[in-house]
Image (cartoon, rainbow, N blue to C red; front, side, top):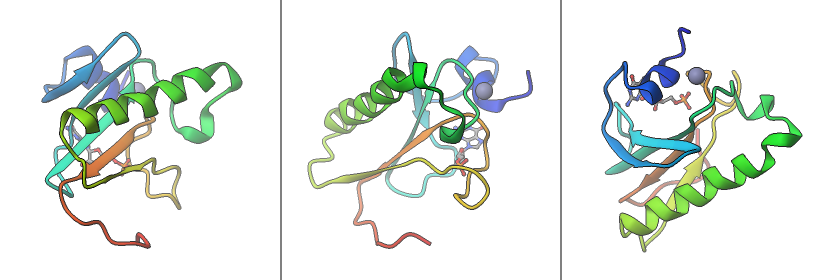
Length: 112
Ligand code: 5GP
Ligand code: ZN
């Protein structure tokens, strides 16, 4: 298994843990783009949002719920952004589904 996020989930690549449960693991992004930049990944390997199947609907909802829980714990009351880069045009560079939770500064729109 060569997936770096699977290795982060199993602990063979170190990371700074933010949150974890039976379905997902959240850790600090190694190149933060905001004062808070957290990645939330499913424990099971799913390559991207485009690869999700019907049986993973509740897992997708759980990942969003985890993002909201983490944001609440980080006191991002002024707001935050959740991003799922998907595929080549979406700017995805790691092929293991992940949510970016970004906050702690004002974020511009539209994204690049
Ligand atoms: P993507 O571009 O696929 O949406 O996001 C991948 C993210 O993973 C990037 O923000 C990048 O900084 C982060 N990343 C890549 N490799 C590592 C790593 O080994 N550890 C951590 N903590 N983050 C990583
Ligand atoms: Zn993986």
